[in-house]
Amino acid sequence: MVTQNIDGLHQMAGSKTVYELHGSSLRWPCMECGKVYPMEYALQEENKPIPHCTECGGVVRPGVVLYEEGLDDTVVENAVRVISKADTLIVGGTSLVVYPAVGMIKYFRGENLVIINKTETKADEWAQLVIRDPIGQTLKAAVNSLYKADEL
Image: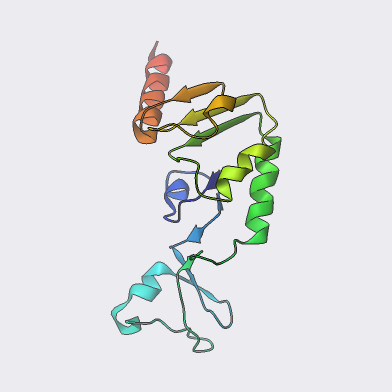
């Protein structure tokens, strides 16, 4: 799973390997020593308005990529690797205008590109299947149809 989301919902839904291009709001690293805290630590009343590291006293901030910050090279390399090895790539819920995620499609060498988005995207012309519905609605319908097929 490669995502631009920062909310951890893919992991909560059961995805085991998730490459979060823009980081995660659930992990809060110390800007000095790198120790990582859970979001709950940062939100505790005694840590407001600015949480500090219990090890070195440095500022603890959300582990997300802010404007003009670079992405984690390892995350990008892993995302490119899995996309280039996939036989099917499902791109969902994105207009494909935010870089570098939009450029990652060029690494896909598989047979089946599926785009699920409410509006047109730059990759529609390369896709074997384009679905113009909200991603949540589409995936819910797909799961429901799988359960109905199992009942037959």
